[in-house]
Length: 511
Ligand code: HEM
Image (cartoon, rainbow, N blue to C red; front, top):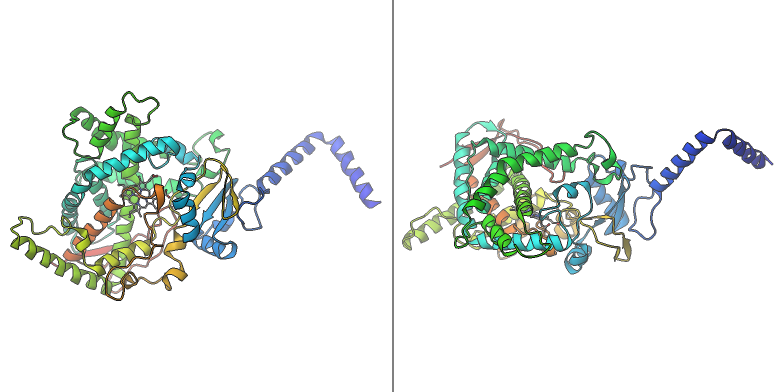
């Protein structure tokens, strides 16, 4: 009887307040739409907040949360960030299946706002367009590979000079290390050297870092479907665009125009020359994306991603050297012996250049030093979620449905920091990469440059820059903390490329 009265009362109220009823019904429908989940998608935390999904769970340290969710939900799980379904793929078996064995299906990039902005280059492209850009990018990198070591070495010597200018002073080396990488990349890719004092270098680093922050920032509208229609710049999209335009105008376009006006078929020297040659070859090809704006966008991608990733790794390496002086001494002893041997070998062979640690094969480098670099990359773990992937249309992975509009994240953190693989993943211990004969031994799960058709196409350039700069830094300097006895703490900050908290260090020349 009481239910009958309540229903009757409700209907009466709806009848007399039609506007309020419509608003309440619409709001309820929207709330219901925002918490409903399609069937058979990978498991996700049962409680979902209306409109923001699982976003509140990811506040704090999102990587820590994903580690916990992996334990609770398994190797393929999902979370909702606002209205966007995000599928996280963890562990070697699932990562191999999706991105190596079925790489073609899982190579796509999601249709997010960020990818909209960057879609002419290689990083954010998919399908046929991506294949064209990727092929040309790989051809360009292959073409320059014989010269990489020499050019990188020259740039490293400039870095050592710049560090000697700061000798004995406590300073934050972040910008200088990123500039060193940026300069090495412009030199290798475009044959143009930029000086540390060139204002464009510092500006480019500043803009690249800001853009990375905007990408990483949780308020960025990638996952909010209605943001496109909002007025103003709530989500910093215009800010991101202005930054990109500035880098294009100050760095990319001038160097592109110079190359274009000087292009000589007979003298294809660097990456840009290779791209220009391909543009000529594709001149009469219908619907090709090998064109001017893509060339500029690819160069932007390489400089941006290359500088931020490799610069971050070097910054972490300096922090590890400060925190683990014994490891640094051991690595340096090996490097010193190695450089002496190389010098002797070169002088007995009559070679003019005796300082050419890296123009010789990097394979000859001492095992412990290489193990040190591997351990820096593992612990720095600078691409914990690699980059966002997608599928063109619905697929199944490990029995779960992967809808065409889902964002898919390869959880590289699940490999770099897995207790089952490393035993003590939180400990910095280069020896883990050495076998019982003292030779370098790298587990297959160590894939900082990812795997499959979408792996990092420039891992050889990145490794060269890392090894060469660290050889020279260890060889030329003792590193000391700003205040004797107070070593900077190793706190990981949030972000797409997690950086340590800013710190200061003294570079004390030892030769
Ligand atoms: C320590 C340094 C570096 C690390 C750890 C690193 C790691 C990665 C990873 C994990 C991916 C991801 C793939 C994905 O999930 O799609 C990637 C892609 C990429 N990397 Fe790197 N990278 C480094 C340095 C560089 C450098 C120096 C360059 C350029 C000179 C570069 C150019 C690229 C490009 C263009 C892609 C996109 C490839 C594609 O979408 O097909 N990387 N890198």
